[in-house]
Length: 153
Image (cartoon, rainbow, N blue to C red; front, side, top):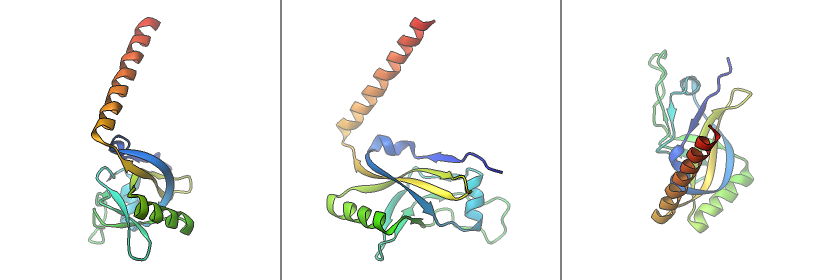
């Protein structure tokens, strides 16, 4: 029964400098978790925000409709609540409000007990020159690996 579901936000590490990471539970309905277990989700355009009560929600998370469901299916882009400790929520809310950081979803996975979890990161946006540096270092690493591989053969 246990499948390895691992949905990543590849764009997050390129666009943001991740300062701190947390693991949060996700409140899901019946057909949402079934669709998530089939791997039909995307967090590439999503972000997290607080409401008036201090609760954390993920916005713009796409979970496709479950194919075997009837008219009781879920909305694909609904706002979903994230579950964290009260201490972690207060710390995140303070960081977002005072320093202008943002909270970005990094990865969605199913843990050992079969519960849906999300890794979120407290992040600072990168400037254009930081992104250029990232691209340059990635290309240099790729070239070095290619040269090392040619010497080993």
